[in-house]
Length: 210
Image (cartoon, rainbow, N blue to C red; front, side):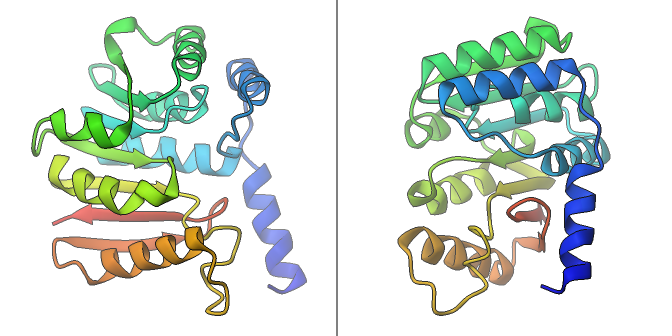
């Protein structure tokens, strides 16, 4: 990356302004040992959620609620966010963030459990948006479940899709990198989807179900 390109990337990442609700959610993330999405990714999530006009959304990997707040701020006032995490402390912190953000309790559904166990119980073609920010070994299964869950024109978003820039390097063969590289190619070649890789944050892989 050229110096100018690197500077532009940093400028774009730091441009969004975050309020006290987001800053407190970030503090809880660090206290729990969770790495939250950056401001740039958060801003893109809000824009994509708003542009999609989603009424029903699923988040795989709640963290401490940073990404959930960003999604809720883009979703409409009648929309519902279902968020899944295996750690009950993460869900508790997320509920606190959602409350501080002014989101009514009936707009969020927090589910404790492994995504691989929870997702098959959700209804086919019932969701407008799925955001995945979870363990990478499980990603292929999560993606296939997400495609099942999405309505036509539904939006799939995968965080950390460039794996600290290693996905673009063919010589990098870390297990996580290989999985992400395979998922990116699979979405590109899937006739059910139209996909694109955004360099925001550590990469956002975005796909729309045809």
